[in-house]
Length: 284
Image (tube, rainbow, N blue to C red; front, side, top):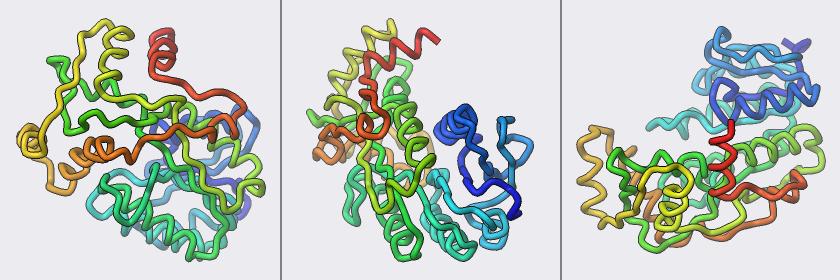
């Protein structure tokens, strides 16, 4: 495996990892695409698919032999995701990976209101303790997901109150990641809080979505009890419902507020706001 590219990218079959992999290929950077199914790996110039699993230590270590820089997209949401992360980070260290670039979450902390933010913090701590160099990309809520929050009736429901968030486009996260991955030595030990250009409430987001999509979208604030009740019909496990609801309560508490200059610092361009994101999406 040592003859494969020294830059490894996870998540290339997903949206964010796929964006990063394509931009790296366009820039002429050889890469090792770590995937669960080699048949689903994107066909890119200079890209070599290698099968791995976050949860399989031996397979991950073998896939990472000879890798110097690793882009680690957080694993799919699951009850045991944190344990998967620990296994993968430990395997990377054992394989001799020198630098890991991890997609974390804005404001990750042991007491984050957003429950999955606690897992991101714990993953960061595991990476720090591993001895590998690291760069953390702490992503705010995805602008891309805002249109998906509206149900068929056009309502965005959740206990977010008047709270605001500095939501960021996945395209801006990908561009930022590529900058780091192409010259990781410049970013050792750095944590970048990646945001959009503005704070936006869900009520305001609904207005922008209405103007940008042609749908009539409104925000309805819920109490905690209403939020859990309205999500009960999905039959999701408790940990997942807690994650869904705490996304909104984190917004209400101000944990996702505060635009930063990190995207501009890394990419040289201003991040997309919601209106611009919608305009660009509809022009594709």
